[in-house]
Amino acid sequence: MNLDQVHSVYFIGIGGIGMSALARYFNANNVAVAGYDRVETELTKKLVEAGVSVHYIDDVAEIKSEFLDKEHCLVVYTPAVPKGHKELVYFRKEGFSILKRAALLGLITKESTCLAVAGTHGKTTTSTMLGHVMEVCNTNATSFLGGISENYHSNLILGGTKVSVVEADEFDRSFLELSPDIACITSMDADHLDIYGSAAALVATFNQFAAKVSQVLIVKKGLPIHGLTYGIEEAADYSAINIKVINGKYQFDIRMPDATVSDVQIHLPGRHNVLNSLAAFAMAHQYGIAPKDIVKAFLSFKGIERRFSYKIKKDNFVLIDDYAHHPTEINAVADAVREMYPRKKIVAVFQPHLFSRTKDFSEDFAVALARFDSLLLLDIYPARELPLEGITSEWLLGKVKMDAKKLVSKDDLLKEIQKEAADVLIMMGAGDISVVIKSVVKALSV
Image 1 (cartoon, rainbow, N blue to C red):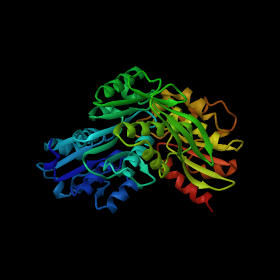
Image 2: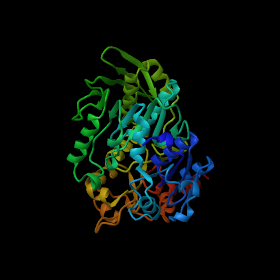
Image 3: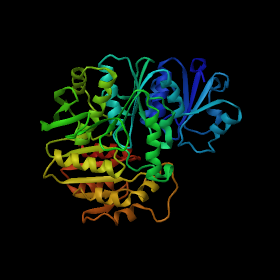
Image 4: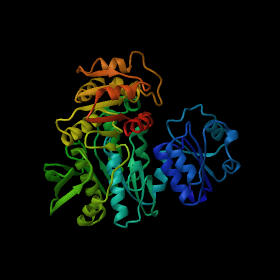
């Protein structure tokens, strides 16, 4: 498909983090954009503010006439959209050009020098750091991000068409649509087993992605894929050494095969973010940016919304919002918060995401959640799934070996939080806990 011939793009599921970035991209490039989503969100509100037409009723009658011209309108959908979606069924019946989100991203990046960040964890932070470095260092790259950058208040950093930075999503094998020139794999922990069926199938697909990389592949030390390596205090091509925490910031050196870069600083908490910054450094360096310029760009990087984001930060109370929804991510949050706030009472609120993920990793969830001083557990957020018999938050709570634990409803959450008298409160999950936290912040900020 030749995108130059596309006059309008209609997105089904326009409010998704990846879809909305693409919608912003076309809108900024003077292509007519509209779309459907199930509910109004902050992302859809911002699209409307930018001039994009969005509606929330699955009805062809809601679609404006300029998006019903099948010769010049491209329809894009996300895998989360059900097969029986009325608008999608109509477009298929009428013979419109229809692409999955990943296929469209693949087309956009095919003609560019593409820097792609893959991995079951860390890819959003790494790609956003890399996108920031590329922007600050004037590469004129366009970055499609899987989170909202605190620097740009957007999931798109708009530049030219010759260089692209993308988050390479393994869900639904989407990243196999990309044509990466320089790529990184941060991790390959078992996840999305509802899609892959087994951890072995997930690893095999990451190997397929690695085989698509045309220039340089960078992998976390220890992963069973050949490429340049990075790690902490390891015999790797890029290694973070002499790590210190100074005034709440990480400071470290980066040892490369032919040189050492001293006094690198990042403002993000947790050693996992040292790894993420190391991956971004390696990718930018392999692209050709001077180490001193990368290090300088790190100093102005503010982070990503819902990645250890401080919502309240007082001397006697801290509230942190985090997207963690996998045991590995919860462990990373626990490591970071214990390092930042030793000897403080740390209370976790967690909303499990997906029945299948809760079932597949229940034992690991139980161990990770028990690392906090107290746990308030919300019901499972179903997202795209129907319930699985016997898989409930009450069932998961029974596996968590700690005394201070409780199953709570969203209606009672604030009251239970106030009873806890926490020094540090962490609210974690990938569901609508991101909406719930707003009322909690408002009440506790008084």
